[in-house]
Image (cartoon, rainbow, N blue to C red; front, top):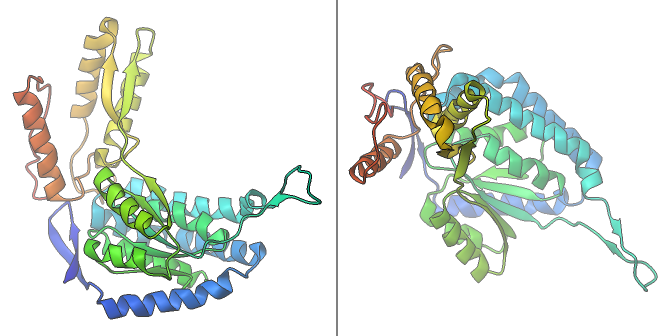
Length: 340
């Protein structure tokens, strides 16, 4: 079995990366378990310096990482650069503030001394999605590592190069070997990793079905789980709105990351007084988007991340029209070779 890195703009296979065997998983988890014993004993000062190093590595290699994000999952190169910058920012933030966040809290009681202490859990497995392939991982990894935990990553199958980059960033930053490890595993192997006694907790960002599966496995093992699942944000425009400003923000919100964002506007609710005006301006703004190679600076509409996702979305469009929705513009797959 392999992981295929496919350029969504062309459907060309960039790279094939072998999936791991059970033995490779065992070796990796043993390395992480060894690292965990030492990492939990490090000071906040030691951790923060290494995390700042990671921020510097991200900034130094910004163009390289952004290009791989765009080539592998298709987002606009400008958005990919912003994602790398955001990852560097979250490293700096927790390097600066984690010690304060995790300081002991004295609690009044009738005892001689009472306080809340925050101690490392151990090794946390992160099951992460492809839509923000670096950011989703770093927003987990930065606070988790600063809290004295180690991390292992099961990334989405269509972003294997991004998955390996993340481990290399922590390695280049000077983190001890095994502090953060990328597991090149398929979805069916996640269950055995969660159940492994060397894993103390699991976090997932993804769909509700995936969340149910991970929560069920973690629950059966009495392990802590944190789940961030899908969203469906409403974009509401009232009669007193600045319509031009609302349209501008609506297009940004709906088409950010080619619409592949849990916080994107999913439903537009317009009061009658401004509905037609908003709709016509929104239609015009959408039609002005420039579909094309996401590596080109002038492109403003990138492909979706996979052709199967594009086809699923198109079927939703067809089903909606069949149920009475009115097609205003578009409503057809792009003519380019990729997942447009």
